[in-house]
Image 1 (spheres, rainbow, N blue to C red):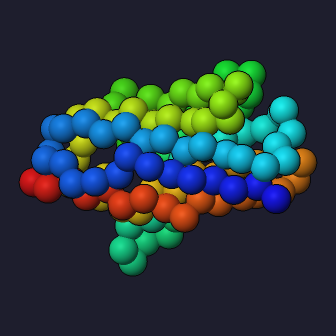
Image 2 (image 1 turned 180 degrees about the vertical axis):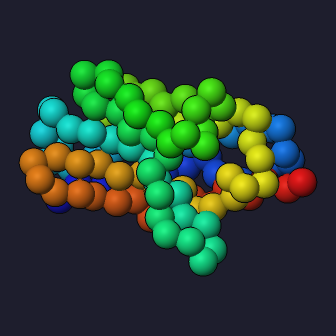
Length: 115
């Protein structure tokens, strides 16, 4: 079993910053992809950023230049540094681990950006 625990969400004013963390535990294969998705009310869940164990990254166009994903492979932890936050970034942010053909999700953490 794999468990993902997210932390770091909260309420911030527009232009502010937040850092999300997601720690994975359990039987985790060394080669995997960890990433962040978000879902705003009434919208579909969308990819925010992803990162492989080898360090390759991809970002949604809407967050490029503002968000940075990083990970600590030894700790099976992925981070999302979010700067210059906008009200449209408001959503529940979910951590996802992809490995051996399976997807595992965290419980989600709320990020609210006030204008």
